[in-house]
Length: 464
Picture (tube, rainbow, N blue to C red):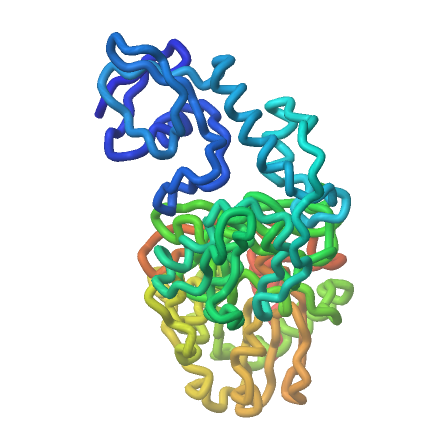
């Protein structure tokens, strides 16, 4: 490590990382647009300029993303020269940027807005008209481009070149005519397109499924974990006024997904926003009915959803041991989404966690024809599919009802965005779930329902 002085404070810096990384790791804010820790620095936006002095030479203003720490370097991020150069860069960037903040999806989380206010750059000196560029340009079924908002930071270009290793964007034309475009105007493809909307520091690249859906300040954000494969990417769930989930976004976790998220996980709204949820209005009566069924069939098969958390798994395991039966979890076949970046192709987000607890994997086709089948957890009926027809009677603890005529009792449980808990991913990393919204009326988690059912079975055994 190298010792440098930042704003009068001596800190340690990695000489292999740019100066801006050293500032950020020591809680010193340096504005930036083109720089991203997951991409190679290019120094195109010039907004990260700081004042640097080395040895006996005069202090000079340099871009922090293309300058590397050297022993004894003295850095001033808040000097008058640094602020003056940043304001000059902002003036150029704002010269062609449209004044459409009131209708821009990025309003409220836009770096250009934030740094403009922070630097006090509120006026421009030129009178030439803004360059006319295309608005609402579709780049495929995921991304919409507003060319006139683009500041040519090239983050999106570098993402496809460096992360997915499949270049699809380029900075076309020269000088003032430069724009971001796809090769030969072909639409973007792949399962990672949504990441460039996260990377875009302004409102140039937006998600077609989120455009004009919500103002970001009306979204409640909660830390969570992606449910769409066993990778367990760290995410945030964003809910509009306690209602629909509007966005899943990646949350930085260097041990799991770094800064990225696949589009399968990003747009997995269908299940959590589906209507006709099972509520809890008849839970007491339904539990009494379940007690009767289990008293008639003490060896009833217990099969958990792979969406069950560790906490739910522990409750199911305790319930199964009290009844002397082996608990299983549904283990559907791998899908075709496996890739070399994040997606594992395994649709079981807590496979490893449930396996470590002692659950045995069970393919839907292996359920057989039990007299009584208890399906426990989110999406269990969906994953079991046609296998439900084999059971004489099914007790379903799920978020949504099943149309199978074999379902004798249905009891509602929360989705993964409505409860707290833990999943363990394919590599043994623990992923947390946070309750981003409330479950429907009187719906309770399995961690409360199963102990209550066990108490009923102990207190009032039904005649056989």
